[in-house]
Length: 421
Image (tube, rainbow, N blue to C red; front, top):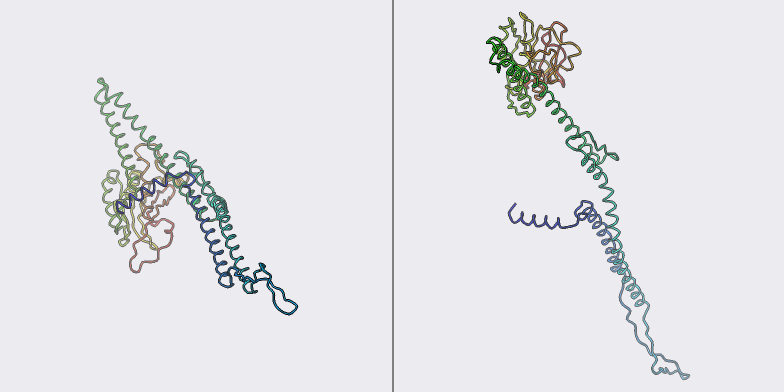
């Protein structure tokens, strides 16, 4: 758009703003539109009638002939009366004059009808526009009453399922999503505040009571320093998990083909040292072949969270199994431990943020499984828990396998059950 066009648009916009408020409404524009349509149709109809009549009938003004009055004498001669005369016309001329007068009357009445129709069309258009825009007014009033702190209000439009009803339903759906998002954000802030309160209080109390006390013994200082270090590590893990959560929600992924078997083998090698410190054995049941379309870094974090939980919670001397395979077009990565398992009443909450079965700070921030599920679901996958009671648990990541020649058709949902069983 050129500078001249922008200037013209700006001038037109300023002129429009000078109009009264009622003249700038959509209702007024619809009224003028309806009025113009009705007025135009009426004018065309009357013009068509007038043209049709004028072209089919003979109409012209009366042109009489002046004749002197006379009488016939006894001898048969015609004698004109002096100064007396009258006008005469034939029948055809009289009929044309009548038609001409009728067309003139039709023209006059048509003009009057057009004026009346114009006024009526404005009134009818205003009424019809008001009826048509009544749901918009209800939507406007409802949305004006909704604030950022109260998203519980809904429009709940009634009436026929027309375009305005669909618009109201769409706005209600948007409000539902916004309400859930705001609730989730408030819960996250509250949970983070709660989780950070304890380690901050621990650090503060140790600094004030021991580290800031000149009379504290070296042993007391060392013990306090260990507690502070443990608390700061916990806060560091929490912040890292929060950053991972934010990145997951932003869906800032770089997807490409990922060899699931190679990814699992790398994760097993990474956690091998940690497992050896607790006398754990990592057993691999990795079958090559499955390929998925995903962000390798995000997928590695999801799998790492599962392995981290298994290595941290598995009994000393037990075995942690990591497996890879493919079933019905779904690639799976599974981590199984021989720990105490997860109680039935805790299974529905195990993927909730900050949920931990143990109150021990060493059990992590409570965000690992939640982050893993978000990552998996953002890749159109599923993360499932297959508990084996007191014999341990198996967490399974199901992802759509990359289409390869001869691969079976993928089902809508991944298979049920523990693939490592």
